[in-house]
Image (cartoon, rainbow, N blue to C red; front, side):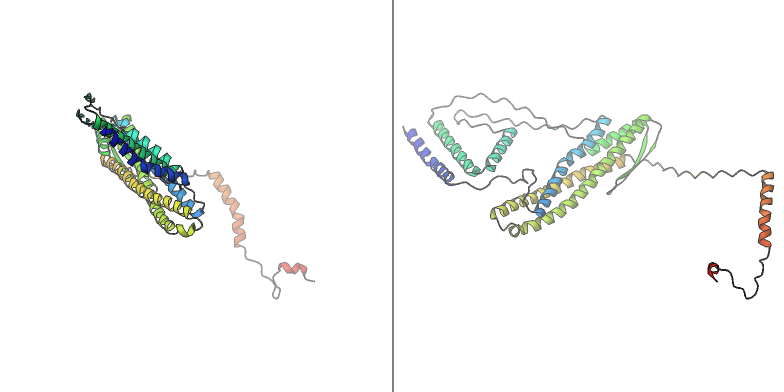
Length: 376
């Protein structure tokens, strides 16, 4: 009887905020709530050309940076596969759940990572709907009422039946990842030594990546290894260049975003709601830019380390062959004696004319010009 009275009292106290929330919801619609378009990975459009260009640049760069780690990892994975190096597989440590005591009330199990992510998506969907904040408050109140009911039921029960011990959790395997740069470099060294094949790799880094590979040893497998090493080094160096270019773009976008955020109220002064929406997306864009800068640093360092390791392991003292001298021009064939005599006779009249003195012109006479033909 006492338990019933306490239960009724708890329900009446806890239901009061629930009724107030219902009354507030019926009074009118609430504003837009939930994560911004930028936070959801979408391209936001404000209606202003300057702001929309900024959001478009941020969105395009976020797509590029989202695939950057996979691009770099695939380069190492391909070379590792060629070398026969297995990808690294990490296992999550299984933590056994504590055994429940007979007197303790039953508690719900902790949600898994998948359940938690699903709940997060459902919550984002609720928040994105007009009035979602009120719905969220109602659901929280209902959940609290259920918990109170469960606590009173557990307190009024004389004893709870013993529960079976939970089965031990098994370790979960993560997705395989590419072997580290030192591990791959070690495999390259062992393979080249086994083949008796030497390599010298030179990588010119910058906006335009260039590689040069010199080899020593007559071995088809060694030539294949050299091609794979050079291809991987070139790809990794290009990733480094891409990350450096991305960091420059991100620094510029961060500066532009700060200026746009400071001017948002003036640019959207006709609508306070629109100005608030734009500023929310700008704030999320600022946070996203910071995350992309961290990712560019991380991916760039991994790619640069891989290039360094490959240059170190392929650093045999092989001299570059000297450029071949240009081939001499073929000598012209000598003319026969008869043809030489004929050529000499042909030149004699020309020589005679050259030696003949020019005829003297009568004094007082002017040289004939083109206008002389038109004189009377």
